[in-house]
Image 1 (spheres, rainbow, N blue to C red):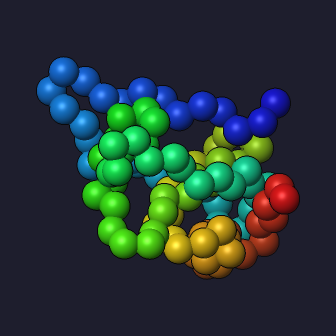
Image 2 (cartoon, rainbow, N blue to C red):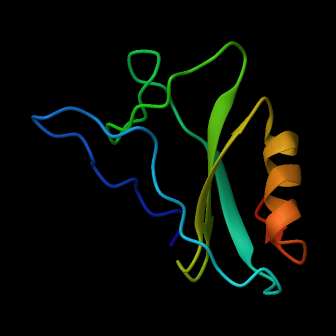
Image 3 (tube, rainbow, N blue to C red):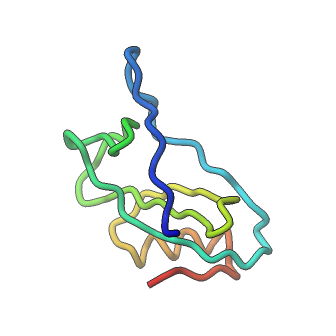
Length: 96
């Protein structure tokens, strides 16, 4: 199956600031897909959300294989993103 696509959140009224996280049970052993979001026009993700990029960091999106959890974290590397996610979901694992 793979990671689901981002929803399109842009509208004629503008873009939302970031995206909402969907939280799950912190004790659950989730398996996450983890991907760095591409930047569009420097500050937007491909679905139209505004992130206000700052020097050297990226937005990483983690989605659990069951779709229950979706988290967005700002980090400089994939390793840093994993560390941040493991603070909330310590029993979890990641593809790749």
